[in-house]
Image (cartoon, rainbow, N blue to C red; front, top):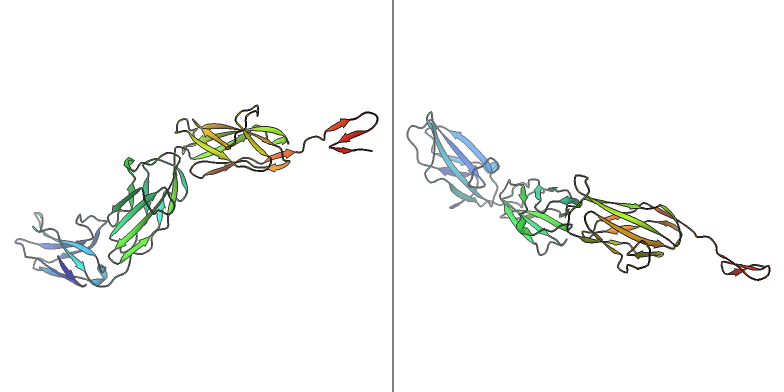
Length: 316
């Protein structure tokens, strides 16, 4: 392993019965098309070549090999591959973006595939996955070669249903790192919810029942998943119950989502327009249709004689 400044001179021993040589330079020793940075077909009497500066970046290990070619086939040099490090100054990788899943996507599998765009001048990518938005203690990390722009999260990462995860990718070379912006996604099977009230116009002091239904990425009803709770918004004039008779208060405002549905019971005592909002454990929210709550009738108490009391104010 030697250190070179570009342009890089390479040389090899000649072979017999050669019609041409093919020189190849790559960022990885597999010499795959994604990692190839330079290729030149050279004459049979050529045993050295200079790889130009414009082809290579500084501060990177490169692999190179030579193939001898004639009409009967190709022979790769016996000490394939060799490598060198370019010592000329360079810069950190260029900007790139996360691609899929798109930010805030929902309904993903527990082994999702993550994809990103290419970062110029990279030598590797490091992927970070966490259930915390600051990604300070990733629950899973992995590394890919340059040009490899996707990764499948394995089951061993331990992702769980209906959970929000955050991910980012850092592109590296010897001069530093270029981080992507972080994205998040929510695992399935629930993709989205609907909220259906028994009525959209009620009288203050009465109850209304809300049916919350979960659907998957195929817009089909979710029929099997790990039970979890939805939390309903609190507010003046809202009291949640555990039953339709409104006899037992639900002090936590939470309801368990099982086999795709849950039923919410609420009494509304404040007149006006009201929207109820459910929040799941991944932080997703779903608002109900607007409910119109009309004021209740004024109670009239008849007293003796010709006098009466309306709403607590005595009439003349």
